[in-house]
Length: 330
Image 1 (cartoon, rainbow, N blue to C red):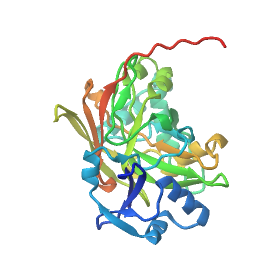
Image 2: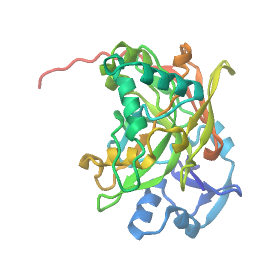
Image 3: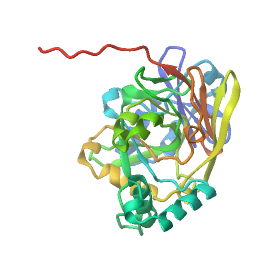
């Protein structure tokens, strides 16, 4: 089942679901967040709860997308209670990339390996523990709260001081925290974990700075299990024409960590188990236009698609006007 959110004629949220037979409004659903919390409190699965509420009017999702009516597939009434986070160095990449990394690991002594290569090796060796066991923790980063989340179709805004604004095609897990502090997975979406790769390359300790950027996810949320082998396409359009396009791989068959291991190491922190909060946690990628020497420009459109996730995620690049920041004493 795929679930999304759109603005209705009265500017209120409409929840839309489709399960192979067209998209329809979910009767009586105020938002995906409200549905998820109702499912958590009643013990009814989200898909079953949607089926129980019943289907209303049919919706042309693609037309709504063109009109700018699609929203992120989940939000929180208070954006401060939505957390955007992610993990890196979790994907094996293409066969050639994988072979190259294995060669570097085999040839280089410990002192010759970069911190990134050491982290990648740790994932290869301990990122997929046996059921019930805890594996090695991944690289982790924070992107911001709900004020940094950008709806599908809306622009990703790069700060005026940024050195780069580039896409990262990823799968994100969507979670709510139950009243008892239990993390509950709502589903999975496409995401663009937009980053500043030039700043990150200056020094790895600048990673935290490079990640404090907008992110977009959706438009549709997959309710159910994540496919083990996800094959999608990431593109950059300039003037309506693709200037770069490449397949990307995700799912556990293409990762050095299990989803369960990544979830454990995020939610082991009590700060991320606050009742009612929403978490959008991005699982990483091995495909970047920046790695191929592409420099993005304002107006470029990022497009990320994978069949299992319905409509593609599209966002244009915009550069923020310079902002003068001065701190004054009270």
